Structures are given as C-alpha cells and as structure tokens.
Length: 252
Image (cartoon, rainbow, N blue to C red; front, side, top):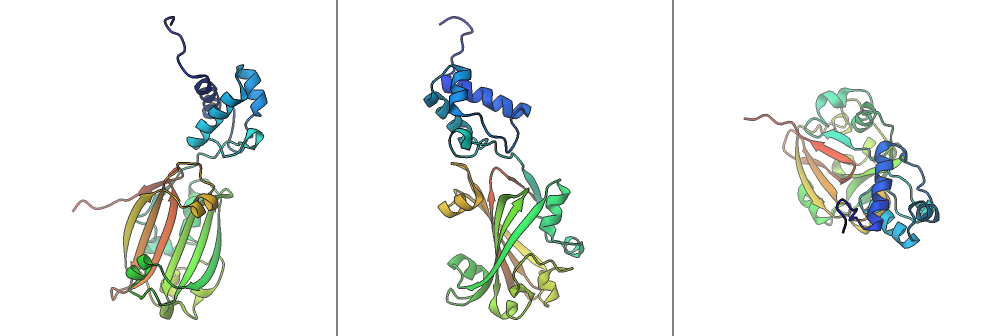
C-alpha cells in the first residue's frame, strides 16, 4: 500500500465528510441529509455504503433514525442542571417554574405537558414514600420539551392524604411562589438524590426519540418535610446526550 494512502473503509469516508459538514455548520440541526442516491453519486460509492455511513452517524447521535431524506441532523443541545440548588428556597421564590427558568437562562425555550392521575406505586416509589404498594398515590407526569424536542420525562408521586383536594390534583403546568408543597403546608426541608445510569426502555426510547444505544440517567429525588416524613418522590429520565448534572458540595 502506498505511503499516506487512505486506509479508511468507504463508508467511514462518507461518514467523516458528513460529520465534518455538521461540525462546520453546513448541515444544521433540523436540516435534511441529502438523499442516499445523491450522496452515492457525490462520493462515487454504492447506496449500501451510504446507508452504512448514515447508520454510523445515527449511532453517534448526530442524525435521526430513518432513511434517505428521512434522516435529519439532530440537535446537539446539552443543558446543565445545578441539582444541588435546583429546588432551593431562593429558586422556589423566583417567578415561574424553576425548570422553565433554567432552560430559558440557557438560551432555549421550555414547554411541559403535565397530566395528573391516581395510581398504585411501584415497589421503588412505595419504599421511598413509606407507603404500601397497595396504597393509592397522586402522580403528576411531565414530558418536558426544549425547543419543541422531547428532552426529559419526570414523574412526581405524592401520598394521597397530602395531595387530595389540593392544587396538586390540578392538571397542567402549575407554579406557586415558594413551591407547591409549601403552599399546602408540607414544605420540603431535605432531599435525597439517587442516580442510576441504564439503558432506556422501549417506551422511553419512543417518547424521547432516542437514537440506538443512547443511555439514560434515572434521577430519583425524595423530598422530606420538617418531621422527616417523605412527601414526594420525583423520578426523572434524562437522556445521556442531552444533560450535564452538576452538584456543588461543601468539602467538610
């Protein structure tokens, strides 16, 4: 083989060229990728080679799934979440929802779809709420969007005796100065976080539009009142290609 010869496979050359166009901004988030036939002609390769290249970039999270003109450049937006102060008193006292405010402060537009239901908890949620798996709990389920892209799933569970007959039963995106739990007499004074990194379920993959092979972080936050009673369990599903989780802790 001549010195300096290109040893990359043909599909790698096509993938590298497309990746470079994305990095340079020639192909922007939301843009359609040229059709397979056009890419094959431009690179003088077969359509099967083009498909291999497109699949490689899809696996990297750069393209949406699909074929030919169905492939589009995915957003590479990553948002930072200061989880050590996310639900602090100062943030609760600010105008609007803390999550919405964080998204806007990072230059993006938030939207949330919220549904409310009554259900029995999973074993995990029941254990953290201190209730039986046969007990009923109130669930506020959120799909959180950033720039109209599904970005995060977040379900909050509340004991029935705390939530029943309160604003927690109302559907829609509700923000209350000081926080909803404080407004109904059960302010959170302590939280416990657990983060598990795993692969998504089929349902999570579909709802969040995840490319193949994308891991998620499952963030479980249990909130306690002044008496040490758990008053809420929030379980959030955070795609690994969209979130940076930040904690700031005192070194004592």
